[in-house]
Length: 461
Image 1: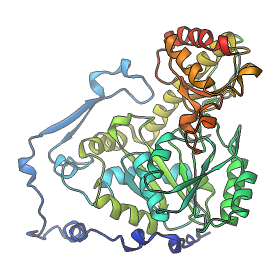
Image 2 (image 1 turned 120 degrees about the vertical axis):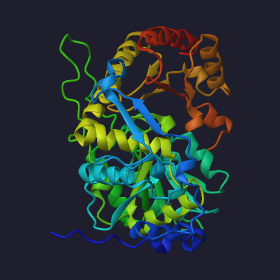
Image 3 (image 1 turned 180 degrees about the vertical axis):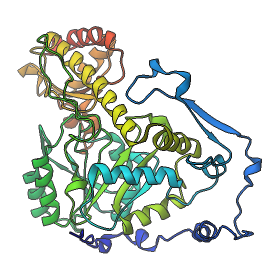
């Protein structure tokens, strides 16, 4: 059965988006790409012979192994010229680009999206980004400008808050529970909305939500999507932790853990995979599964939307750094392939599942009576509600005292107010929440950190 065409939401574009068009100079590159006999005297491109790089290489772990197992055979190289059956040469990767990315990189992300999400409408496409923060800015600016309001989780990623506040875009927080944004709460806010400007966008992190660690079930995603359809909202699906899903926590019992890691085939389906209208703008990134310093990601949406993001790229980032694209494209196309990529993701899932389990084991041992938390099924975070003594719960500045106590005990967690879209007034600062990340510290340091946290919290609980 033929897939339907996306619903046209371009009527919601901001004025800046409506007038944003292909860079005049970039628009000429199609002639160079289409005609191998064409001699270009138009492009102001530096000649590749002036690039002082004959070869770029990286020694990488075998797919599914950690870097400690790297062997000389795992060297990948990109050369000046294109070799048969390999990705483009450095003359392509290190040259100016067109905002869509070097073809081998762009093709892999497109193929991967097809394999994992299989979008349900016909005119979907992908476009490169520098990771999800860059992609968020461009997705937001498509539909929101000064004076508009963005619907967000009641606790959300601080970079989102830091992006929209200078743009004079307001934030409307939506109540959350253990699965993230509550669809009935989203519906209530949209139904009762009396603002001057119509609501256009909702932003959510559906997997391992930052900071709460909540992951939406397929049922929750369907319900959120139904509300978006009802109120004709565009959904920004920011999903950097999507591949860091793992099994539910099981207390230590002597049985083997990590026997049913999801890989790719058993991940909770994305909002994109449910989207029949083309109203989901999905943000993906290699940051959490390869390395954040690569600054490589991609956006999936209807082509008329990805075109606008391409045009924005052409007057801002152009595309991810050529060295980064060369490494990722060579790794994915020439060395690992889709099967190797999945083996790598399983290894990453195992690492973070192990970290989650060790951390939770120790929290249950040392923090009983001091905090409450829900054990996450994905990601990097635990969201603690500090069980303040009743007489302290209404005391002004109590959470600053808690933070000071943590620092004095040589342990650092993030105060909850930093994730609040409600601002930084004192009432928000005294919300009894703190976020812990089990992603970075050595597992051998976990017990030291958690016992210090217990000592820091004890006077308040």
